[in-house]
Length: 111
Image 1 (cartoon, rainbow, N blue to C red):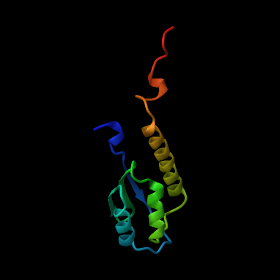
Image 2: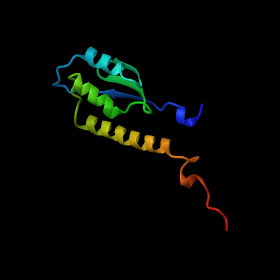
Image 3: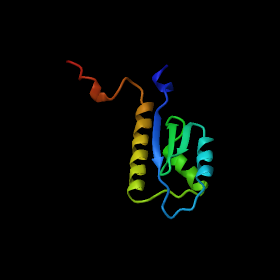
Image 4: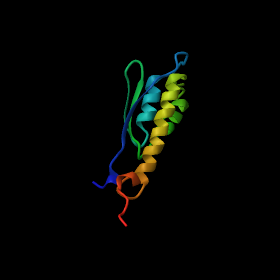
């Protein structure tokens, strides 16, 4: 399988806000229907989502959870999600680069 066709698998736990009133099953079902989502499950604390980054991003998944009425926890959890999204942006950028790796992987040419 060529590298550009290989999925980039991700798995994250989305934690609902403590004050949120929500229907976990509704959010889980909406997320599971998204193209690129491999699975979504509720473990009693987090809505665990597995997905292919080449087809869907965490930001898109968060938009669907908000549309389902599931408010996600703020504070450190929001910071963690932002960090995940930052990493996804870099991963996707690196995956679309042509060549066999970063420039630091190639020694300078001799003169």
